[in-house]
Amino acid sequence: MATVTSGEVTAPATADEVLTVDGLSKRFGDRTAVDGVSFTVAPGETYGLLGPNGAGKTTTIRLVCGLLHPDGGRCSIAGRAVSTSAVEAKELVGYVPQEVALYPDLTAAENLRFFGRLYRLGGRRLRARVGEVLELVGLADRADDKVESFSGGMKRRLNIGAGLLHAPRLLVLDEPTVGVDPQSRHAIMDSIQGLGATGTAVLYTTHYMEEAERLCDRVGIMDHGRLVAEGTRRGLVAQLGELDRITLTATGDLQRLAERCRALPGIAGADLKDGQVLLLAHDGRRLLPAVLAAAESAETELRSVEVVEPDLEAVFLHLTGTALRE
Ligand SMILES: Nc1ncnc2c1ncn2[C@@H]1O[C@H](COP(=O)(O)OP(=O)(O)OP(=O)(O)O)[C@@H](O)[C@H]1O
Image (cartoon, rainbow, N blue to C red):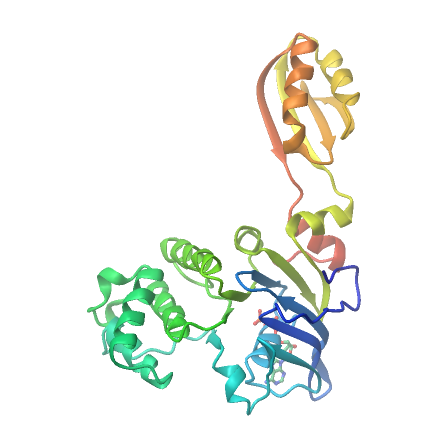
């Protein structure tokens, strides 16, 4: 699998991948918005492009969708080359832009029927897809309400539905949860999670770390137009060499508890701090049974155990020197 370190990331092209992006570049005048970006997305996989404003996420996905012409590199969807004129590849993609593009005086179902016809759907198939898609985005009970009565988040969900009508192999979403209410945010995230199970590949841009952590099977971290790292959350964190932190609150001989824990394989450190035992571990959750056994053998009584795994924020900070939210 293609991976990491800073700099070039090479993506092996295999027939199984829905999306293959290979050395993609795009300049706007003197500014290089996308700089030799390569990655792949497999069927059913959710791939998150994570990065701060201006990192090049939107430009990358516009290239993937054939809305912009690249200055270098190429991408293909299910083996079909993407270009601004290639209809075949474009038919395999559903694109959900940041801006909502709906007719406010039509109902949710009427909007979807309209977009479905643009995708050349009709008759029974269109009716069925409209029903399925409304269900998927959690708006089945609002099918016959006019869109003008919808909240911003509901409109965003309907927009996602429009991108799904033709059952694309790849759904591309650009910051779908920016500025939406928490209820819609959860509904959007649930819908996206549901897509993975149907085999749809998802390419998703966000600058919300916790969304990427929850939704994405793999994450690509973009900075200044380059993909500086990619992998699973755990894989990215492991590359940093950051360890899980386990905090034990207990009564009894804490010194002995720390010593017993220090002797366990997989524990890289054990110290007493503020009346608690702090452990550094390579895989904290897996070690918990051994830690519990150590507490018992040290004749201490555990009151609480907290495991904190390093997150993508730490990875991002390490790779780019800036916090994601700046
Ligand atoms: N049409 C354009 N003309 C000129 N410069 C552009 C254009 N589109 C994007 N850029 C520049 O390219 C760089 C990358 O922009 P892009 O929108 O891809 O970033 P992003 O990661 O999606 O950021 P955001 O989270 O703000 O959407 C930025 O410096 C931006 O100003």
